[in-house]
Image (cartoon, rainbow over all chains, first blue to last red):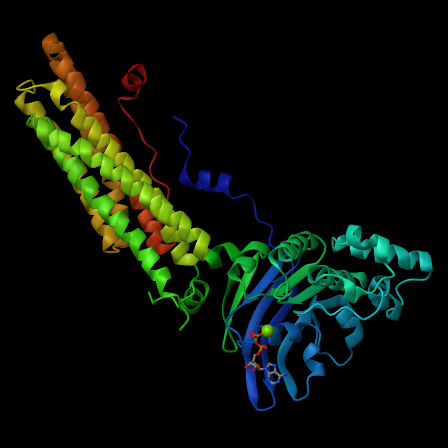
Length: 271
Length: 235
Ligand SMILES: Nc1ncnc2c1ncn2[C@@H]1O[C@H](COP(=O)(O)OP(=O)(O)O)[C@@H](O)[C@H]1O
Ligand SMILES: [Mg+2]
């Protein structure tokens, strides 16, 4: 008799899982807007080459947390950030950190596509130019093409690179903005509800793109669509009135979450 | 569990849950009626089981439709998703139980009056009541959300398997004693086999019900050793 033991079956079913490296880490992150506290000691790890989705009812602090990761909150008057945020173990709030360089490493894509009122080419070239990433026109052309290709929009715009970026459709504009973020070779891309202004087809294209991008980048996405979080992310973090209530593998979060608030939120039972 | 912001979502889930309960109750009745009809050669009762099966099929189709519509319309998550997916699976097991009960009922005429020796009838009867209890209980535990009872219920399927093996031997003995018993015993053998299969479907239902309630899978079940396997292959 050569009976399979339960343990040996389990082993066959679940191949060795390599724990991914932690790219960014929030450690007891607090945020105040003036007197009002918006985040209360959030601990969250962002694994490398994965998509982490931030979900939760509006006003729970998703965007606030996202903006802590590349210090976008610095630009908001009266906003104070406490706790610690690290990128590759480096404190991003360290006074020695060059914020412009940080934002190149941790790029951002916003809810409303916001291309510059310039040519498609210039939209992409702008970042690499100010960061001095290219030495010649030829090199810049290459960066522009590569970025547009990676953002899956090259074929749609290659014949009209000199036309204005604002003339594109909403979905194209959003992919242009993703290309713009990619152009400066970021390591992490933050996306704040990147599809909320897009139709379903444009949304599908952006989601497809997100999945491809994670081979090369680490992605954090805020979304209010549960289905989108379930489709694109590997990990999901649930926020509620300034607290991180639960975080875990997306598959588990959407089939069997531990926290009652997560259950209520994702099943549409929030009162 | 609280209510959905969208009330009609609750109604749709409630309706699917009710169909499972209805199908569960019907399957228990069918199993009880089929074996009673068999042991007392009650043809009208057997006909009832056969017509109940059509109701069972209709309910399953109804459930499938509602579940598919709900998925399309609501994109359920977490416990709602588990409830809908498991309902589809449980309904398919319940429908199979209905089929198997019908198969038993169809043989009632064939077995014939007074053909079943007393002790044998007794064995089948006790196997049938084991199976019937399992069906009844799994439906009740599902309806009352008593997940903690399900591991033991699943383990109890082994008793049915043991009983089946014993009946198999007993039937062989009768057939060897008197070849005139062969026809009736063959039919009874099929009935016992059908009862044993019903037990297997109960096991599946228990696993799905457990998953709906807890979000966890029951640990893998014991490896099955079927002592009648050789004869099964031949038959
Ligand atoms: N610039 C700001 N000034 C003052 N309060 C703000 C600002 N941005 C956000 N808040 C407040 O902080 C809380 C969290 O907001 P936000 O992070 O935008 O939530 P979410 O992205 O989850 O909808 C809310 O109560 C919001 O009103
Ligand atoms: Mg927001």
